[in-house]
Length: 192
Image (tube, rainbow, N blue to C red):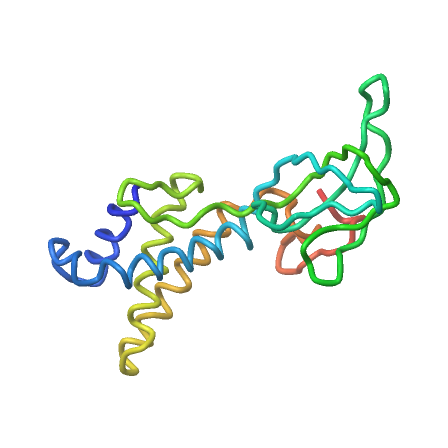
């Protein structure tokens, strides 16, 4: 679904005329991008490999890149094989990382962020079945500032949004917690 289609779906769910999209356009884009950020950072967590070059002190700058978080750092030897994990620390101002590898070319597995949706034809980089959940988030935000009846209705949309997000979480993402019968199993010995 495109940005425009998601906003029109939200209007239909709110029992508004979809032709009145111009009245809600900027507000709904803000709500949608807020929900999209939650979906990407909290549930999808896209990972990509980036090449980082360290300076003479072993620091690599991350400012201006789409990196949300560096997960692991590795380096290739002369034969092209990856060496073990390289320890690193975040710089105090958060603008880069520090390693013990000066003037090195490192490969970083990173969680990346996706750009906001701005054009009507932009599509969220989420699985197709998760797109309606973004419309639910728009409805939640729109109704949550109303009276008690609207706020109660908003909770339905928030629950629906989070149920949609659970479908995009990768299997095994986060912890090893699994539901077995009525109990939560978090010990690795009980994984199945």
